[in-house]
Length: 295
Image 1 (cartoon, helix red, strand yellow):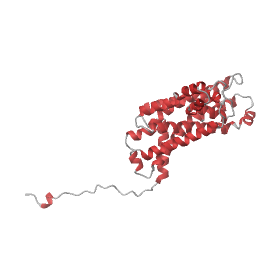
Image 2: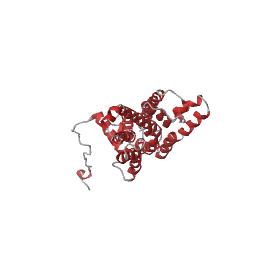
Image 3: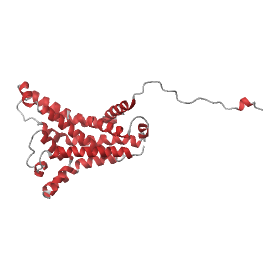
Image 4: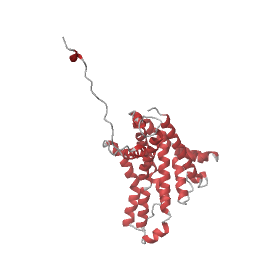
């Protein structure tokens, strides 16, 4: 017969230890998520296969600028230089593919793995999460939109025989390069994230982003060329044409007479205004999505 002490159960304290360290708070949580998402945009900290596509596309976006640097080094003044307002036309497809590959991963992974509840149970608010993700993706896109144009500016400067005179004559290009790069990155980031955040399925998000960027351009071209003045409004539904008109207005350049932007014949200032309106609308859509999404 067992004694009462033998039959009695044992009680163990399995509780968590009290945390006595510094509490870094909401700002640190937002910054940590921002840098984590920025690294994730290029596959850093993940398996090697996650790095291939974003890094390869980033390299492609730099190719025109690097070619210009090479030309400036060996054939200064003998060839036509790539103008900053036209650079986006060379890399727009690469930037769109980057958005299609990365945006679904940035906003879909946490939905697929059901880790949103872990984020929202701490100091991080839902809008903090959405804005940190959007800011990180915009920063990643700046590497494809702003940095190549900065390299191009240096290439054009090296192609001249008098760099001081070049800077004096072209210093006003610097804020235009910064402004155009920021607008392009912000529009494409907000638009692709607004689309990709609607589904946790990466494949669905990728296809939807590609369709918005690549299908709308020929459709806008058809409407502008074939349906009269009413159809000209279709140009504002084509991100490529919208950003083309915006960059030409920023740099004070004239679009080719046969381009969709020229045929639509809207005042140049309309394009950046519409761009800003779409950025605001897409940001609101992203915020609404993460206010409603189940965690």
